[in-house]
Image (tube, rainbow, N blue to C red):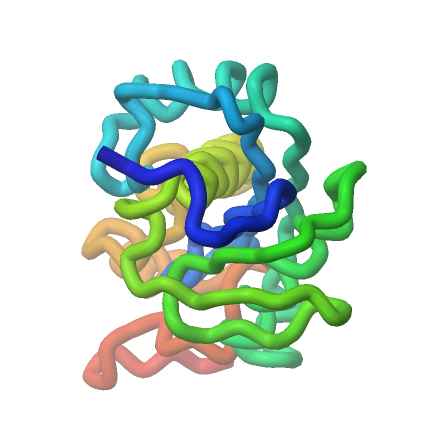
Length: 199
């Protein structure tokens, strides 16, 4: 069972990102403050539940959260500031997007930078321990997947609708065959060493 809270603060916000290991598209983060009465039996780390369940959960989370926000950091910015900084920036921006300021922030993972003067705690595998981080992981994943399906229409040969920009064999084969797009992250190793790509 996932826990509702980590701290004693009333406005505790959970935040998480999706798309950190992808070769194309944004890194997307979400932040969620849940109501004290929030309960959900299906909600878990977004990687542990099916796409169908994530899509089912998103409107429930949005309707029942006290507030939430999400934000995409796109590939040009990722290439400029690196993926770790981009992930943290996306989390900060998703907290900015909420209409309430949290009193405490819990973050999935082990890396974060202070946000304003708000106390925070990083929690390894936090998306499988706390409901607010799990809720943020579901929102980040579904908003990012939606975006990848949209840009798939522009470049269907990479099949982003299916692989969401992750380094699958199929995605790498398409990069080898067609080269890269404006959505690819130029600082990432887009092909294994033996298949050098001329940039």
